[in-house]
Length: 341
Picture (cartoon, rainbow, N blue to C red):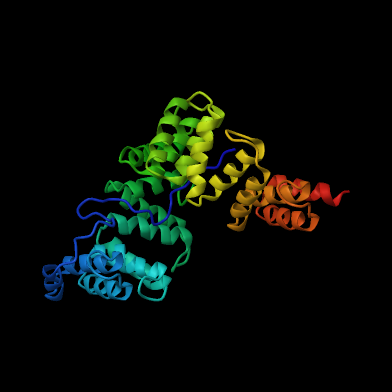
């Protein structure tokens, strides 16, 4: 089992100067006074208080109002970190991808490293603007060159997958290294995969294991899944199915679909735990309902073979079809075999 892990969009990281995080200055009369007097930074912080409910009743509409005041004064943090995000996911205002794009652009053009990598995300995904991988690469580069760990991780992804630039495993490795060494959990996963797969660097399973561990211990669900795989397969460490099971469990409990699929496989096959087909069926169902092709394929298998559920060929065909439509080869083979009966 192997799934390459890309960077997670909208992860919370730190940057030079102010930090983008959920640590807010507590609500106080002094903070309100400064905000009402027009202090852009105080307005930004007051918006955080209302968004997080720090010292005051949570009120997303008021948060949006204060972020707007801060952003309209040209505050780059209010523009991208808060107002852009408000429009992106609907905090105190209706979702509006175009307006989110506009505010992230304002922030990025002021040189805000976080705004730059997020603007890169918009171009890469085609959110609020026409998809343009070359522009995404440009903005990721600007962010990465300022030392932003998220920008560095995304730039590594570009070089790894050929997003807006020719593939270059060595450069990918270099940028993932910069990101990982700053503590970026996604950068650490990707760096671990470079070492495991000899991508841009000599194969070194021990280093792969070390980086997966760093990511997992930060609570990253993908890192936990990769660490579980390392223990199950003996990548850089002695095989230990019980530890593999423990890390898969942590990943699955966070709602990670890959973690749920693998955790289900543990219960189905008795990896680090007693076999429990009903539990496996439940976990495959969770992964499948979130659109995971592997989970859908295995759920089809459960229905076809009566593992944890009554046999039901119609349901098996339904789930195999969903998985096959996503390109899952095992499901495609299962369909062909079924149809040839």
